[in-house]
Length: 197
Image 1: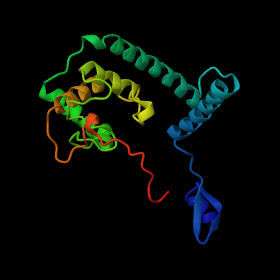
Image 2: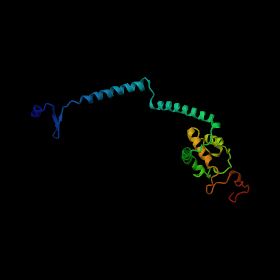
Image 3: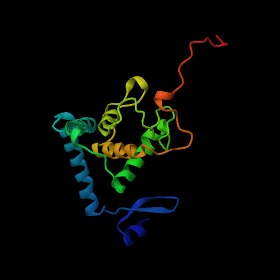
Image 4: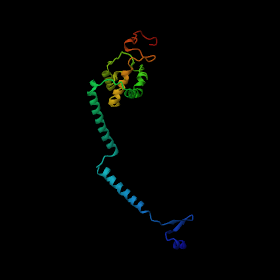
């Protein structure tokens, strides 16, 4: 042991299973990084938890979400204020984007071709809530709660609402296979009691 110590003064006096431990100093960059992390951690604790000078993640998220909602509400209010000036677009890019929105949000109730499933047929001329483009926009924005149609206000952006309304408007007059009956030709409900009652 003493011979090793004389040969290499960094070797410590003990060993474990023949492994000798060196008494090396840590690199300077590591020591500085270690102390920087300690100081940063203390500063963080005092800044965020002791003095409450900064927002924690949850509070910062709520603040950002509130600011985002205000921007979204202002954009929707501006959009809804100018609805009367809007016309359906015939541009292929707009109709393509509208079709993508339709397939994502509308097709589950109106079918991929607009022929109607749970929701009404969008391809005929019999529209329950108005047949104009403006009526389509209002229906998409406000929904029809009593019939189960969701309001898309706040879900879709104003340009998405306009794109999907233009696409729906372009479906009018198309003849999908096996469409839902037009609303004015749906069979009347029978008052006859069912045999199972």
